[in-house]
Length: 213
Figure 1 (cartoon, helix red, strand yellow):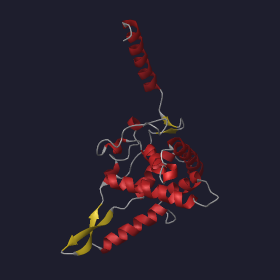
Figure 2: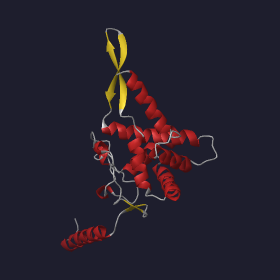
Figure 3: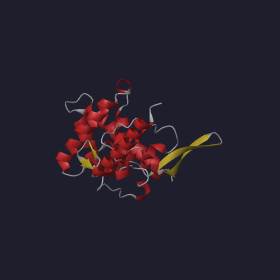
Figure 4: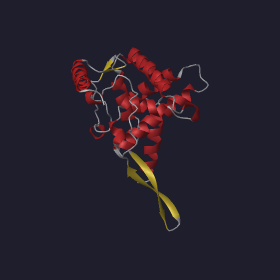
């Protein structure tokens, strides 16, 4: 253990860091503020972490978000996008690469829309997931499908999955980079364009669910 003087130094250092932290506004990649970001869908407010208390400079917290049920709803939404990008064996665990892709994506979204890219992402997540789905119900050897409502957390999860899958599919064997494809997908999804993979999937799932009511 260190001496009492060393301990005092470390405590005063921590207090000083806290004071500095409270003065400095935390912006994503040092550019995009979290203050003016809002979630217009009331049911998703608690599940899309984009408020200033969830603000991070880098979407790489190394947090243990999977250890407890529902804890991942507190994970910053941009970090959840980064984690969703790290799919398909060869990309597993390459988080720094995924962070770089998202950084380029945010730049592109800002250039093309002139809006805060965090807000555009939040709108895309809000629009990109089905509100109604169908589940299998087995009865006496026959299987039929029954329409069910989708929980808010699953809506966020599915929206992120669809957005990343759409971007990955369109970037494959294409001259466009993954960052450009992800930016296109997020912007199309945010404005509910039928060119978006996520919106197409959402409409398809909701149509099937409506038929199985």
